[in-house]
Length: 479
Image 1 (cartoon, rainbow, N blue to C red):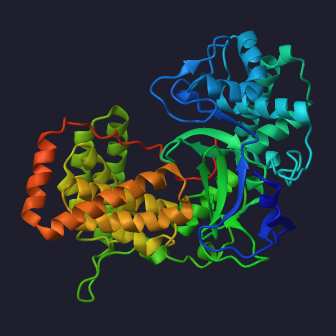
Image 2: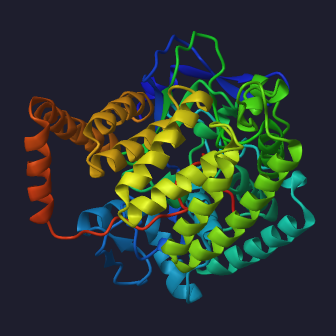
Image 3: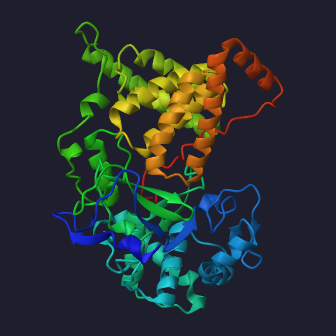
């Protein structure tokens, strides 16, 4: 990050939301407001042997630290780059006998860096760690007990390093992590793999319909404008996925981030009607009893699906999705959240099982609903369009597939930028589908013959297994 990045923004006291950031100049869609490397970051506990502890890339083969046997890296280059951050950790892991959980590891890294460098405002950091909000007083009794337990383990973990911080400082760091720990994704931005602290980003307040988005690109987070922003406007991001009713979003925000959302979309319930909509034909709607029955059936099926997903029984998941959609589609409108949930599940699982034609049908309905609900430059919308486009492409539906890939490319150029790995992949797909589309339009019969021949000569490949660990929320909260 350069000093110039932070010269584009300034801290100000918001009306009822504490400190926030506002722009000092105009921004256009796709502009990077600022980029920021992690102050400290760690890999999730369940991925410590699968993800590089320096660059957070997911790799099949990683080299582990020869001393602590805990940290894993892509190669010697990553290991050397990480040594300043890992040095104290390496000693602590060996002394403690085993690594503690991710929250304690992150807190330790933050405190070690504060001990090395001090906690000062600088050209590239406009707030000290000490001044970040911790919401310790808002924690439940159970959360406070967990915090106390973590603090005790932390003292034991780093005792041999002779680093000393008082109880208040340690408590503050755990509180900051709890409400400001940023979800770190893999190199393609698809899976959550770690958590880190980004002090400048922590100052950006929430809005359910924000003017900025945040992505991780080449080891730094980028705050990117998704619409035109005038000088003097507050910079906002969404802490939660928009695809929830306003009351549910507010409840989630209050529970996880300890504030009441007063954004326009929440106070006016904007799009709530669409998210709960039912089908209407010739002015007639299904009875409330019928709607209630379908919703209850959907909830029960979701419970079954969660169990089958955890056990990897994908055929059962597909069967449940089909049964539920058969009941939902005559009753629920195309923007109803329950219908969209099952369309998303069905398209993902059927793609994995390689029923591409059926999956494409569900994916098409899903993105049609999303387009009516999400902001036109929403990253989740772009990712969904990309997946739907790829599904159509695999199904041999080249025209709609190429159109969706182009649409996704336009969104992700704004939300991720041209240099992000996922955007580069998407551009390659766009060029390939464009070439195939030209071939299709010149001679449809020849196109399908060539496609069939290519598939016959290709080894059978399994699709990536569906995951529930997609990045949908900005900040990571300990479960």
